[in-house]
Image (tube, rainbow over all chains, first blue to last red; front, side, top):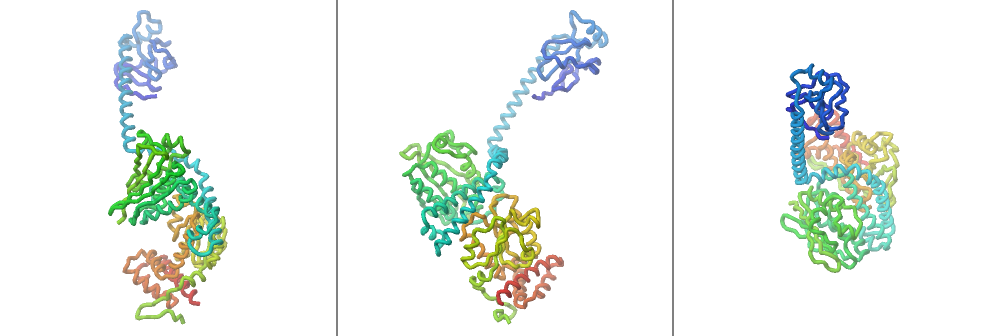
Length: 373
Length: 217
């Protein structure tokens, strides 16, 4: 219930179960020890208690009480009360005027509160902090729902370690890539799948431990090398879906970040591109480098992103309406990737062509990183 | 005796130990309640690796018996500490400050294990490829057989700067060559009056002496 203050109300008032004296009239002394019949009254007409004292309810939370209202036909109790409190009788019309005053005051207060609320909300939204707060509020739910991740992580580690043992025991000499080139198709598939699962778990773990994003352990590394690793990890999955994965441009520049955190960006963009690409289409990972920046982009053909949802696709759990119709998804990958980009002082930009070909709309997600000198 | 320590003026040159020799003599320990899948691969590659499901012999963690210890954060050392792996690591740091420890865990993003990760010489995720795992172990083994590692540890204990580092380097080399750290002790007494710091630094120097002379036998 709204709390409204009546510091200058002329008559005694009960507001939110608290009694306040009026500045013109105090409640009559009979009210000090009465059984408060007035407070039990639900009607909004003038009432008189058994002590002959008048009251009138304004609304559910406000009651005027303890006053002596003159009457053409006073009861015995009223006469007695008036006699005992001479000079304190008021007219009913005065009481009505006071009640109208309360209504006006409440209306004004409600309007002011609404305006204040709107201003606070606008400020909150403009600062984008609501997204972080929302994530914070969601944290217990996310943690509850992702608690199985620790078990999954152990299973994935076990699969990955065991396929490593198989590859290294069976194929002597050479590095992992050389061993994979000699491995059977199922062996290679198990290896690459275990890597993919591991990367997906990394993303989920960051949702489970968002505090890790704020306490990153930065190192300097080549972005191209990191992205190349993900291109290799995803190669098999792209091949399976018959989507061509190309890499163009080159970068020798280094960035300063926590590589395991930053890797969520190429991982998410490659994962999304694969998810929404149709067989026969192509995904291009490209690099452009200047003396101060490295721009990394992923271009693919996918579902339309309507103008009104261009910014919203980065909101947590939001899924583009055409994308959602095409594929299942969680709606947290792009949000997390964008959040990480913003922590690194940059942002993921999205551009989409207005024309649609047989594979969908050409869509480019790009992010510009500052080069570490 | 120890022909490979050649004295040139005030310098004590220590030999470069071939990595194959290091590998052959190195003792690795894995403490993990779930076992260690890469054990056969390390053995194929010529390493001597001991596997404990829990802390089996505390004294071997306190006296530099192992060259590198891979320690899991969860499910081990419950009898030693409620903090499990972290408790074991803290015990090792206190009793054997030159011991190399790799934190080995699936919980790489959980900040509650950050103390554990920070106190380790390296952190490896359990989902890492064998080649990357082995690379890190090799890197630490090489550092265990380099004077620079012990000098860095002693500098860290003393909180010293670059100038002291050169002096510490000379004293450590001398201690290794003479198989006793009395010269280093004198230097440490000039730098600090805290007996605990002196003992910790001497403990590191003794580990260096043991490592080099165990190799020379």
